[in-house]
Length: 442
Ligand SMILES: [Zn+2]
Image (tube, rainbow, N blue to C red; front, top):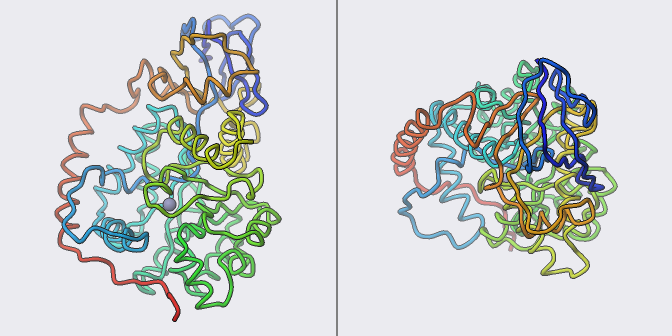
C-alpha cells in the first residue's frame, strides 16, 4: 500500500538545499511524488507543521562498542591513542561473544534509528567470534529496519589465523543475502597490517567488486610505523598496494600530509571524518579542507546521532577556519549519503527526489524563524537535533513512529542488553592490555 506524509514542509535535498511544501507519496520503497493529489486508499501519516528531511547517514561507526558505555575500568589510565586501543578497545573486542555482538548491534542500531540515522556504515571486530559475526549484525539491524554497510576488521594483531578468518568472514558476507545490508572489505589500519594481509584485502576487494574500509593516520603512531617498516607514509603505502580508489572509505586521515591528501583526492576515495572521537582520543585535527569534496561524517562508535556529530564537526572546523560556514555541514551530510548511495547503487539516496529510496525522517520542528532553502544550514547548525525526530522511514517502511521503534520493543530488549553488558565487562576484566605495539623506530 502507498504511504502519504501529509501537511509537512519537505527538504528534498541538502546540497544544494531545496525546500518545498506538498504531500510525499511513497510507493514500493521509493519516493513516488511530492505535491499533487495523494492516491486514494493510501496509508496517511498526517504531520502538519513538521519537516520531512532525507535520513542521516553515519559513515563510520563501531556498533560493537555500544555496550562499553559507562563500563568500569581497572587498568592504569591510557595516556596515548595506542594505549587506548591496547587497554580498552582491543580488550573489549576480544571479550565479545555472539550474544554481545548481536545486542551491541541492536542497541546501537536502535539509538541511531531513533536519532534519524537511516544508514549505518559499520566497522566490526570480534576476534573470539569472527565467522558469522556480520550476519548477527545484519540480522539485528534488519530486525530494526535500518540500512547498513558492514565489514569485518581484518588485522594481524591477533595472529595469522584470525587475520585469515577475518578475510574469510568478509568474503562470505560479500556474497550478499541481506537486502538492506551490503558489505565492504574491512581492514584495521596500516600499523596492524602486514604487506601480505593488506595485499589479500586488496585482492578480495577486487574479486568481490567492493570497497575497502580502513582507518588511516588516525594517530601519528600510524604514520611513524609506516615510515619505520616501509619507509613510506600511510597514504603512499595504501596507494602502492592498490587500496585507494573511488570506492575506498578512509576513516580519520588526521595526520596525512599535503602529498598524502593529494593522493587521496586524486584516487577519488571517500574520507570519514569523526571529529568528536578525534577530540575524545586527543589525536589531533583532521585537515578537512585539504581532503576534497568526498568528506563524509561518522561517529566512530560514540553514538548514532549525526545531528550531534555534524554540529560538532562544524564548530570544530570553523574554529580552525573562519571561511567555513553552516552550508559546510549540509555538504558533509550530503556527501555521507552519496557514499551510501554509491554502495547501494542508488545515486538519489540522501535526496527526496521522485525515484529516490524512501529513507527519511519526520522532524517535529516548530522553528522560531522561517525555514527556507537559503537558511536551512543555519537551522541545522543552531536549531535541529535528534530530539526533533518523530518518525523514521527506511526503504519505504515506517520503522520509527511517534518516537517508538515499530518492529522491535525497547522495554523487552534493553534489559537483555544491560545483562549482556555486565557479562561482557566481567569477561573483559579477565583480559590484560593487548601486547601489540606499532613500530616506533629509534
Ligand atoms: Zn573507527
